[in-house]
Length: 238
Image 1 (cartoon, helix red, strand yellow):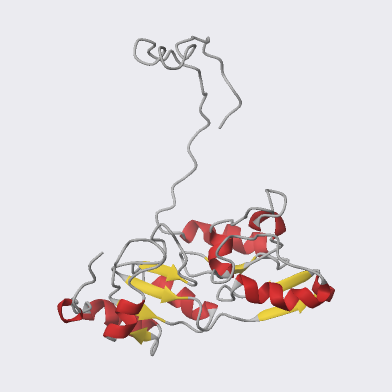
Image 2 (cartoon, rainbow, N blue to C red):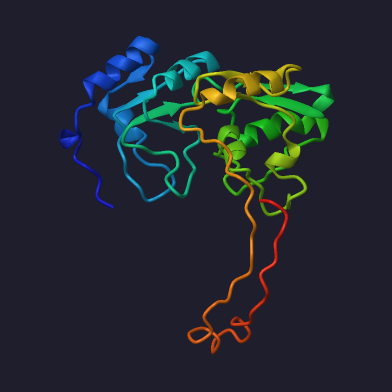
């Protein structure tokens, strides 16, 4: 892949930068080194962002979401499919989100999204514990990406993947509402604010699934039996 000439890097949209500065002052990075340094992850894509935003807490992330601007969140940058790059605004959730707190004698650990998986396991090692997920990139990937992707690994199977070993999390809804799922009033807060999510549509009515006849003239020579017909039968609502 040929890298772009920094002299040809397009200037950021001043209107977008002004909106960010108005919402959360002082977190915008527009230097060429910042933009090109985050223009790629572990994939083959090269997408220089207009700016890199460096929030310091969940409240600042919420303020960014409330602007309605196009945001891409990045932490470890180990994605193989381009999830950590964007031509719009890139939000760095690693620099100021690295806290690790071991609790209950290592039975639980409270971690921010920017902490590297190997670092968390190093903190748990004296207690004879480790996190369930063990992706191949554990020396570089961060907890934010591990949770977002429901990472597993070669040895944890499905019984110890991320979702199975996650007790609670603090999340920021697209509306900018911060919800701690471990709080006693988490369900009430979520119900009260879920209608604020932009683009949310009402749930569709239940549908009945059915088997259908598949054309047998093209494929049955390769996959015998694929042209069989089963009578349509209702199933439980989707």
